[in-house]
Structures are given as structure tokens and as C-alpha cells.
Amino acid sequence: MEMSSFNGTGVVLVGYDGSEYAQGALDYAAQEARLRGASVAIAIVWEVGGYDLGVTSGTLKTLSHTAEAILETGAAFMRENYPDVPFQTHLLEGEPAYALIELAKDADLVVVGARGRGGFSALLLGSVSDQLIHHAEVPVLVVRHKAVA
Image 1 (cartoon, rainbow, N blue to C red):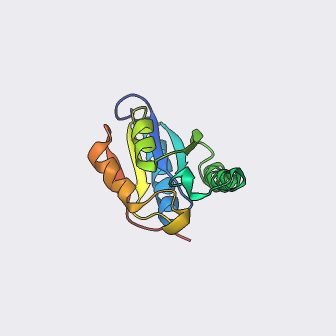
Image 2 (spheres, rainbow, N blue to C red):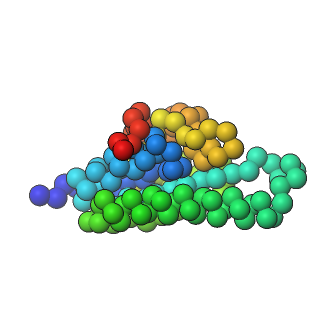
């Protein structure tokens, strides 16, 4: 029996940064999408704080390629573990919380991990989940466990 989606868009958005917590969030999002007959939208959002910091175009290209590789890890997880669940990917440069809040407007649910990677490689920060909880127009689920090995 197929269950209806939350608000009708049929999309579970997951903020993904490749961390163990994000992997747990992706797994939860895929399970929820399967239960709801929905699809998963995997989003990775990266930013460089201020272009006046001497960041070169080569560095930006490297950051973008790294984000693409992390996103592909999430896509590979979906293909391997949830071949029956349709998914799409979003690679965005910008402020992570704002970008996810905007993407959430086209989703029924947002799922994020409790902790991101931290430091430079932080593509989703703890403050992102806090911002989503307070500003997203749809339900937000924060997964507080790491992916099971």
C-alpha cells in the first residue's frame, strides 16, 4: 500500500555533507521516502567565506570538485541501497542554511544530520540544522545518530 506524501510534493530533502551524521540522515530520508512513495533530493551546499580572502579560481574549482565527489558518494549510496527510490541531486554554492531553506519550499520534509564535518570542510554546520528548525516552512527532522557501518 502506497502512502501519500506529507504536503503533496512527494520530495524528502536531505542536506548532505558526507559526514557519518549526514549518511545517517540520508539513510533515514531514503527509508521515509520509500514509506511515502516519495523521492529523495540530496543537496550539498558549500561556501567560501568572503572572496577577499585571496581565494583563487583554482581553489574554487577544487572546492566544487570536492563537493561533487561527496555528492556522488550520496548518489552511489542511493543506487546501491535504495534502487527503488527515485532521487535527484543538487550541488549549490552559497550559504548552506539559506539554500536549504529555499530548497525546502519544494519538499515535504527536510532531513539533516545533527553534526556536520566542522572546520573548512563543513558543508553543513550544526547551526544549519538550528536555522532549518526555525525557518523552514516544512517539517525538519534532525538525525542524531551516525550511519551504521
